[in-house]
Image (cartoon, rainbow, N blue to C red; front, side, top):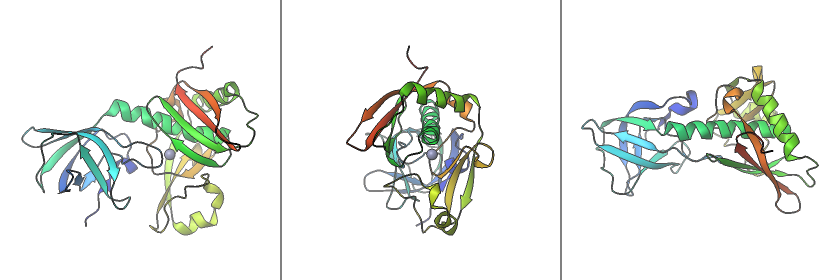
Length: 245
Ligand SMILES: [Zn+2]
């Protein structure tokens, strides 16, 4: 089966694109030859938006998920939407306001792992509240201190860039992987590193999500809470806006 070209991986700022319909599966999921819709993965939720047919019919997309493999991207229409024809050329639009918030949050999660360099046991990004869980017996850190350090990295407006590496290079640099339980997919031969700072001077780690181009775009952000989740787990909750007084 032909693969979907993941345009968001090369340019996370694409809000619109054209594509061809490859398949509509038995549950109505739409597969395209290329897409700007990010599929739920790595703690970042999939995109919502619209697919418009040449005849002007609009198909509201309620979510985007990976198919049987991560290279398959399935667009899930809301109930009662028109069904496109195979081979149709369609116009894609994502809900940009929502996506930009997710990009800002997701990038902030990377910065948090710079300030808290502990093994990550879980993460979930959402529009207004995200969480990162660390294997951390006793935090000894305060939300005020972590928030201030986060804002220093935001204010420095570090560039965010990408570099593709092979499985062998990742295997030779195991310290690149910060997740304790989740390993990046290997065996495909190509892994994308996300670099923060010039040449990754601040951070570099494998990630397939969408990020802002400069850390300054994150804007005001703070740690709302540090929760104890089990003996060796601390959950950090990230929220937009300045630290409440
Ligand atoms: Zn990421």
